[in-house]
View 1 (cartoon, rainbow, N blue to C red):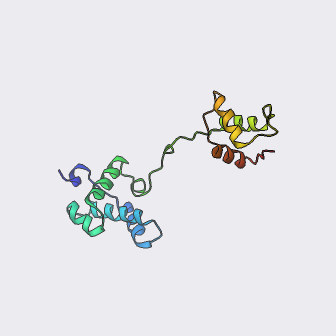
View 2: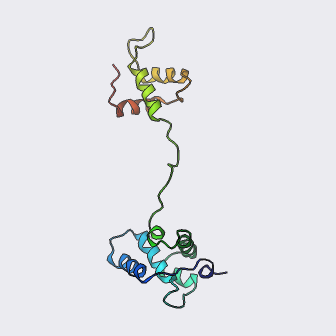
Length: 156
């Protein structure tokens, strides 16, 4: 089954004009322009559509890209701008270890009096004490230094 039958692309006249404007003005990103050209080539409202291979050769993308653009058009409910635009990432790829609470606890520890036998806190000493505290994740001394520098806390 071809992608034209599985994921049909039918554009309104207004959407076609907007996509033509995107492809001809040159003020958008190259990937957005490529996806717009693919959508224009897949539009069944103007007549017969070429095969995926022909469209891919004409636009300069892979057949898989043609399939994915048509699939995304159907999944977004026919929203042209959601199809050609970038996806917005809901979550960061790696959750942050240093949250606001961890940062506050770390600053409070750095502002407290140093342990017996030490005149002041050092980053390595803070690293050892953070490892002993249960509700703060283990942090490297360089991470501790970045947090303190970001909040303009100077170890004296």
